[in-house]
Length: 422
Ligand SMILES: CC(C)=CCC/C(C)=C/CC/C(C)=C/CC/C(C)=C/COP(=O)(O)OP(=O)(O)O
Image 1 (tube, rainbow, N blue to C red):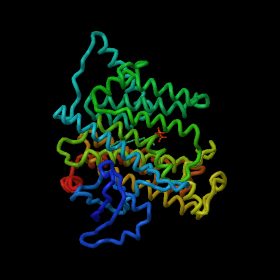
Image 2: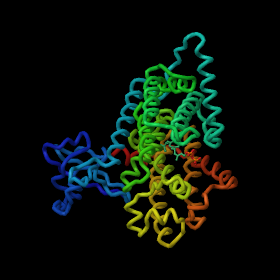
Image 3: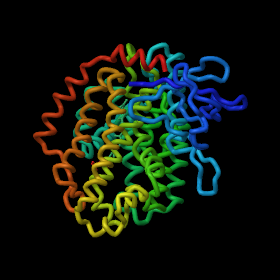
Image 4: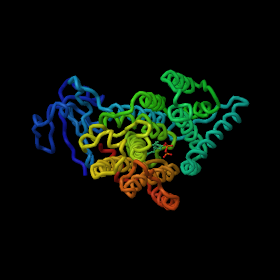
């Protein structure tokens, strides 16, 4: 279900950048009473899903149950601030534009040929092989999935995986207690170097090569480091807007890094933005699931990744989490959190079908497996304080052929048409 609203914006609005101030809204021929819209809602939103009808009139798609979200919220000082969702969507648009440029210049979505200096080729394949070993060691199922991809894509995904793992280990690994913001700054300048073709070590060299072959942008990588900085200084999230930004930094970024390598099916007619949006949604869904699974474990480290305002609305506080008792209030709270995580998985599903055929199976497999963790939290009667929800081996084995069957579904004509018209 989608409802088209016609938004008329004020003359000095910068609609091209996604912002504007709402003058009036029409639904069909009906002029809606715009005085009913709060100042926040009068600020134009729309995440690029708008189509120019005539000067200053835009048709905006409102999808499913998702309200058209305001791109701006008033902060406590009464100033308008951009929401995390809009900030992140701006990155999505930038990534999508990069892929389009690459597509135009290459005609076909494929890798650039190697320019090999004598002696470097075997070093490079050694570097990639090492990345493959790390991936196989830490993410076995995902590694098996990558074996289905073309050799260039598979190696590139390994290189990205390894960089993300090393970044994560800075704050989560054995030396995490010594990590400082300065160390993260150094890691970031190393990242910049490798994007300029000056890798620091062998594993960086693999990624350095990958970013010359695929239209991968540095922004999501920098944002992931930003997520680590945030994790160092923050252990509470006021509301979902703050949590959303954190989830983007640490997991949504992985989705954005992966799409240029996984590739969009040549026959897909979905907009590049919509595929990136789905990839972002999968990262967010995975991270939300991770947070819900690890509530007890995080609390023992003094961390609560749940939105504080939603906890309070449910009549809960940090103390309840530290006490770790499954009460009716907790069950109700968890039901809503699980519902939201599932909405992000649903959003992600729409994009998997649009990926190149060989990338669909591993992505479906990881989506189905990770989403099942939510079912396991329910099966544990919402005790995520002392029980770690996990998907059993037999269930994992069943998920693989299901994922395979789903991966055979080609990009759908229907979704293409609606994606095109938005
Ligand atoms: C859907 C489309 C169009 C493309 C796919 C794009 C991709 C690959 C998105 C996935 C992003 C991703 C894998 C994010 C990481 C999320 C996450 C919470 C990982 C958890 O990592 P670990 O902490 O190692 O997990 P475990 O603790 O479960 O082992």
